[in-house]
Image 1: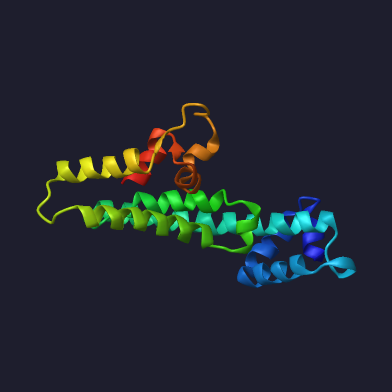
Image 2: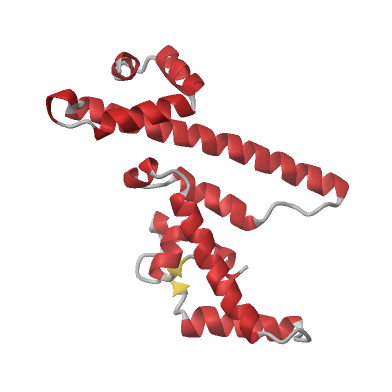
Length: 184
């Protein structure tokens, strides 16, 4: 908690110390945030603790992004399979996770993956093994846009949530690039 209290003064050394603790600090912050009453954190301390969780999440996402980028470069050089677009989209979801998701790391990403897998399973069940690419795309379009109601968000096109796969799957609205990620 003393390190967290130093964060209010934008103490970079305090941030580095916290980041170095990794999962240990995440666990400790969760314990502190669960405390209530006189033993619990003050509203300011709670805000700082949530900031720590978000900072740790962002650090983790940046590390994952660097690893994903390295894998993509290696795949490009070797001709191996590149990382999926879904992996990058899930990192964007993790980066923008709402506060309550900070207490359940990875749950939101697993939920998005499960929904995409469910859509894929429904599509596979409809496609004959000998189907052409064109037939598969037509059936996928029918599933996504006619049955599931995916569409562009014409009323609020510039809403940042239109770029986040979890929001797109929940609202069935997005921008062309996020709809394409869901489509892929």
